[in-house]
Length: 97
Length: 171
Image 1 (tube, each protein chain N blue to C red):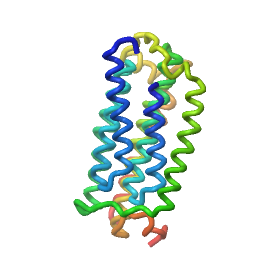
Image 2 (image 1 turned 90 degrees about the vertical axis):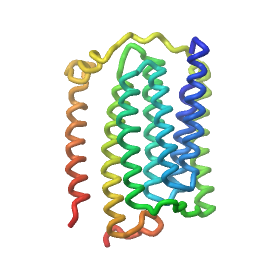
Image 3 (image 1 turned 135 degrees about the vertical axis):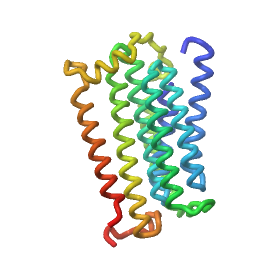
């Protein structure tokens, strides 16, 4: 029963990832998807193997990797904004300015 | 899921997760989207606390709600004029997003409800681990030790710091 909100959260993340045009909004949708996967790891660990901690450690490392990935992505977005003055993916079509 | 209080807390957290994640991807203003993301992450931390993973819930609040959302807010403030709406979406792309999300969710929900007994499984009593056990498992090299991923994460964070500095430096 904990998997139902996680499933809806992942669906929202997929929807936002496809439909949003702003790069930061796409990153927010990505965070929703990562977070729902973390919930899944923890729930499967807690309900199936409550004597071990593997899922919890996997969620812990996933949180750390998500933080690192978000920091680098935001640095890239701010740098792109500094060069191109926009954060809209339908207007940023060149890799090199 | 034995007591009524647990059920009420679960219901509040689940409704908050569902409502705020839908709002986070449908709202027009980008700063509101980041705020709804914050509420979703806090409700997730409530679920971790309810499953007796207090350390994971604390990490979720400290890293996600305290770090990542603040990073998002900084980035939004640096790249947006305040009060500006998001661009309206084109219709075929919206349809594509809705269909992709519903197709994936339907497949997962079918798999989930085919194991119907798992949906309302009782929460087993946990083994009573504490922070000490987590710390010794993180720095252990035995079968259930996590020293290698721990060091790999530290190298990754170092690379992330260097990469962030190199990217953000003015040329």
